Length: 104
Image (cartoon, rainbow, N blue to C red; front, side, top):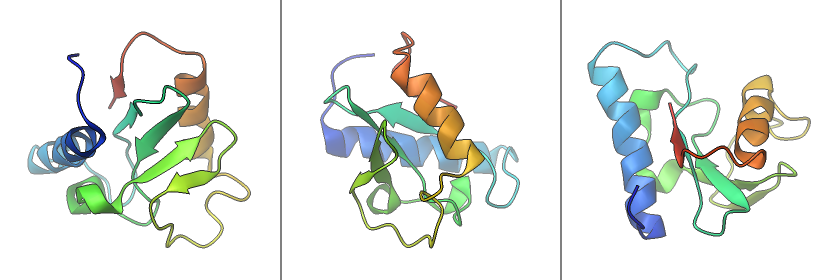
């Protein structure tokens, strides 16, 4: 994937969720679209109470591999402390530095 700016990356993550929603591939708040941030030490993902088709770029959270929200406003009470199972899986995928930059 070509190098992109953080705002472009956030836009692409939100757009991917909306495309999946348009194709009928969402289930309420379940599902994941995320991407590794440019710092290679964190990643972008949606907040738990939002459906993929509801997310705008400004709704995304940047989370480090310890589960700390380091950018974005986390409006979810308790989802990252202790972490949700969906979040734990994403940390693992991102932290092992798999070649892809984005996951669906």
